Image (cartoon, rainbow, N blue to C red; front, side, top):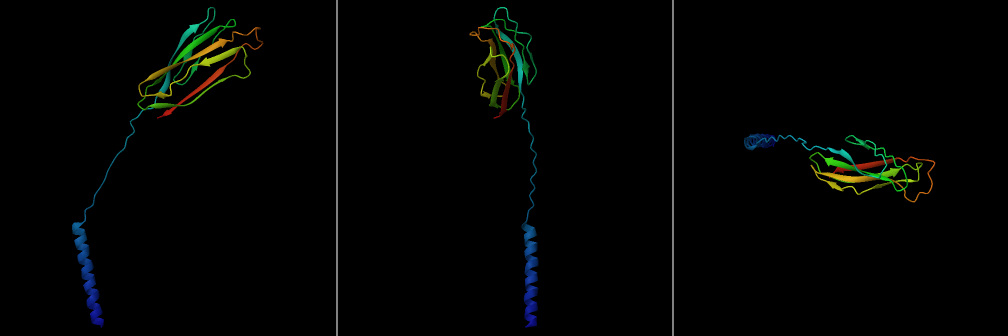
Length: 163
């Protein structure tokens, strides 16, 4: 019985060795190599501010801008006066942009006789395109007395995100 076991064990070892040789003969190692590169450019920015309209006798100042901000200083004289500015936003990148958030907030403690009005801002800005919107500072026409507080600031936040 011991010799039969030894023959069976020997035969199994020979079969396993033959299977290993057969497997290695028909086995192929495949290699996959790859590289990914980001080539898109995100570049949404302010490219200009122009004075659009000025009431007679008012001073629009010299508006200033950088890629991410714009500043203007309007001098209004009497009720009904206004100054409007056109702001240009450009998508100089290669990735389409979508408007995510717009917030224009007037200073709560500023003059109640000054109001700001803005036009709608483009919701989509494709790569290479530009859009404009207008900001108008106005001395409210119905004001009957010169206010004690004579200034009012406004802060605007415009957020574009990758589409």
